[in-house]
Amino acid sequence: MPAALPHYAFARGAIAVIPLSLACAPWGLLAGSMAIDAQFTPLQAQGLSAIVFAGAAQLVAIGMVKSGASLISIVLTTLLLTSQHLLYGMHMRPTLSSLNTRWRISLGFLLTDEFFALVNHYDRETFNRWYALGVGLTFYIAWNLFTLAGIVLGKSIPGLDQLGLEFSIAATFIALITPVVRDVPTVVCVAISLLCSVWLSFLHWESAVVVSGLLGMSAGYACKRLGVGQA
Image (cartoon, rainbow, N blue to C red; front, side, top):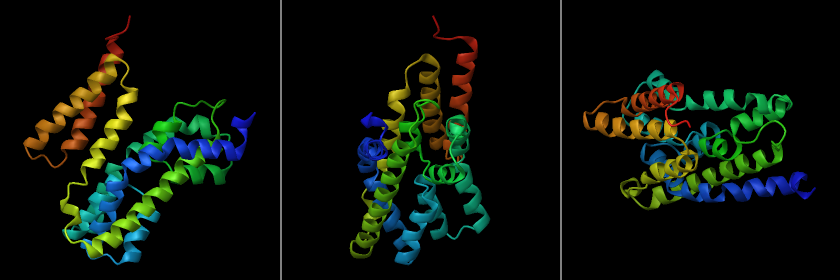
């Protein structure tokens, strides 16, 4: 069948991730311009996106470098902000276990929130590695192209990071979360996370986002265990 052909599946994955790639354009521009503003060389700024490929954690790391934070603080913060990838990997392990090492390493490197959102609902029987590669590689290329644009604009347009481009981060995650909010436990998880994030940020908690996420997940898990919302 055509859907099973490598080039067809790859193209299908590439097309599927285009909307999310475009939504992250301001995010990528910000990553490039912030790196230049933090005194990175253009090569270092591009290398950060090419090697680290960490989205929000990348932006936080750049800000910490600019503020003079220690290397250990930057590394620990980045690991904490990207810790959800461990859960993603554990969730997808049964699906990817039949692939060879080269494929597992490649898809593991390309694993992002966007990748997981588009690929995680496939099981071992329906999963197509070429579709997954199309999703991941297209998003990776787009992220690096937008970073390059941010580097160029950051050198020619001062104050690019003052245009509110960081809102694209929130917009992207709203787009990712909305389709999976289908039951009461998930609604509770999202609502508690949102409310706690706003409240703790108002109280100037440095770990507001992390703590809010943990509280939201705990509330959602409790609802599921108690059978709330189940017929």
